[in-house]
Length: 251
Image (cartoon, one colour):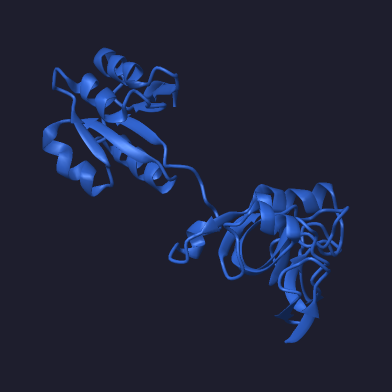
């Protein structure tokens, strides 16, 4: 470890950091990245935060760019999660929520031929503060590094069938909240498979109950039964702003 003096205006004026550190870089062959232990921290800019990296996640960009824009030695990776170590003057004034020691997730332009020292898959990095999100200390790192919006809902009509239970579980694995239409005798089954809400297809108020539960905002519906009644309920359950309804015959 050593003291690294930072440019004038950054806070703090110096940080304790490894003189060289480890990261993933583009190799001589586009499809074979390499590990380098000789990386150094580039000079932070006025709008950046210096981050000690605690995690990263893989995107299509990370394998496409080395192939289509090869730049051997360029640091790889876009998404990161880490701890703020220093702030540029603009970052400090525009992002008072980011401070020394705060947990931050964000994105950098990895595999950049014009700025090869930009990349997320290394021990330390500089990131534009305006593109960062402050994360609670208690938030799981594996979730923070790939933050998404609120979970979207999908309606699965006929979820207690074999195809329906598979659709339910795949939807849950994909991050959806799943609402189910089936017979009451199968409510326990679909709840055990992960259903977030269940509705009785025999109930005269089934459609109204779904629309009330979703506040008329449902965007996705999958009709496993695909008869006249199921098609009507599935299609009409989609909210006023529109969405997608798919019947099993089209899968």
